[in-house]
Image (tube, rainbow, N blue to C red; front, top):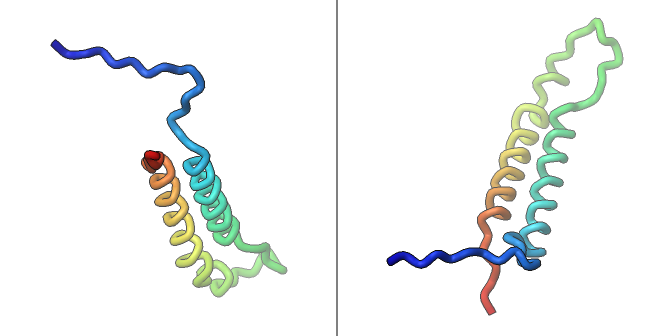
Length: 84
């Protein structure tokens, strides 16, 4: 017969301090990526400047940082606490 194992909620958390630290690091990386993607404002809003809109920072670096932050978040969620 199968045993019923229940998890006690007496102060034990699914995540440890290390998990939360990695989550904060991932959130910071995502925030930096979003900030870099937003860019700055144009001096003249009536003039389209493709160098500003299609810059390497907005098109390449920022999305890579956002994806890296998401990978860090996944790592933080699935990271197991060290035994011992």
